[in-house]
Length: 99
Image (cartoon, rainbow, N blue to C red; front, side, top):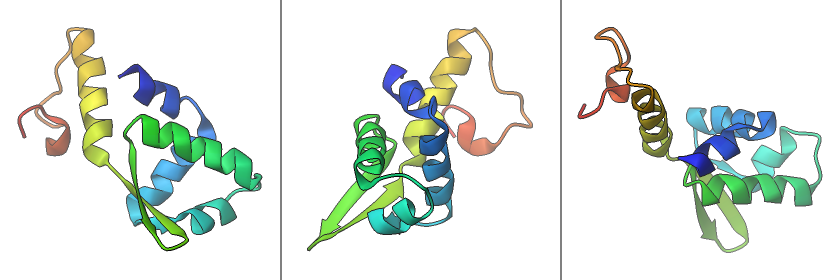
């Protein structure tokens, strides 16, 4: 869980996840959305991969990233439950444990 929250602590990585929520994207497409060097973006991608938040598929010289929403949902559930809280019936079904 701590790796997920470390990954989420950076606004650039949060924005990458938001973009990937819409659709899988190549590293080049994602990098074009930010005014950062390739090395910096590569570092962000590495943190997201290590946290398990994204999956990377390499085809020839192109890497396509996709969001692993289940990892994010599970970390958020664990966090909420660590405070003895439960999601209310009106919360998104995907976030309820066992849903």
